[in-house]
Amino acid sequence: MELQRRALTSELLDPRRGFELVQAQVEVRWDPLTRHSARLVVSGALMPPNDFDLEAFAREAQITCPFCADRLEAQTPRLPARICEQGRIRRGDAVLFPNLLTYAKHSSVSVYSPALHYLPLERMTPRLVADNLAAQVAFDRAVLAADPDAQWVSINANHMLPSGSSLFHPHLQGSVDPVPTTMQQQLVDVPTAQFDAYLATERAAGERYLGSSGRVEWLASFAPLAPCELRAFIPEVVSPAELDDELVEELGAGIATALNLYAEMGFQSFNMAIYGAPAGTLGYPLNLRLACRSNVRTVYRSDSTYYERLHWEAAVDITPEELAERAGQRFRR
Ligand SMILES: [Zn+2]
Image 1 (cartoon, rainbow, N blue to C red):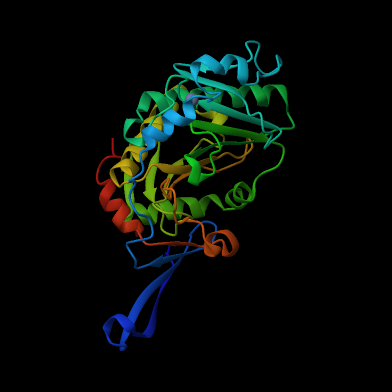
Image 2: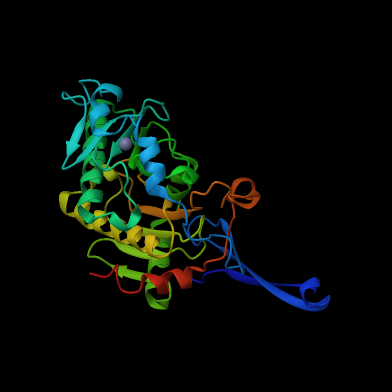
């Protein structure tokens, strides 16, 4: 498979150099699966590292937080008995309950722990992520068993305000719907051979391939949708509901590794989506995207501009190859 990219050169008379004629570069790339475009700009200044006192901010938000241990029981909703007799799903420290704000026919929120109101990304552990994923998988299975109409599963994260999170307390969100999102539909429309060719091409090229942890393969996205985008592929699994205990552990460890990498690079806000397809979809590899968002700041630049929101094309200044270099060997088993 040929990965499509095109370098463009602009010319301008630069006031910083006495209006001398200078040339500048930008590269446009096309995603090998869904064909959306991405723009790699040379800046180095679009995503400043975190310098905000998140711990102090956490203390302020904690006073009224409904996800903290002393309020969770009274202030978060419970699942109907046909989904879960106990009303909430618990795995390790993780607790899952319905989202008070309905985003899907079945929408859930799961905290990593009611005790972890402040959880910077360097403190994410395989245990915390795997238990939270396990709670989501249990929810997905219960919903699929109770409601045959709902078959499009996703597990997602908005982490910190810039990512779209309205509550500070770290959590995942799940969605099980009778209809796919735009991206779920686009991904399920990709022929299996194209997924295989993309992975084979990246494995051979090496510069964005991060390795396999056993059954999960990790890549720095060739044409990212958002800054520092990582992708993972799990062949032979089509829905999060099909993740067995071993895969939950493996994927949890990979996601924790990715979040620790983001912390090292200075980022504390991220989005994640694990895009499920209906059970029985032939040849679809369960896959996920993780990406950084701007850091929390009093006055901050959003990473989501007219490019991302209205052209559906990310403009990023950390190249996938730089990201892969920072990641090094850590995703390999
Ligand atoms: Zn809290």
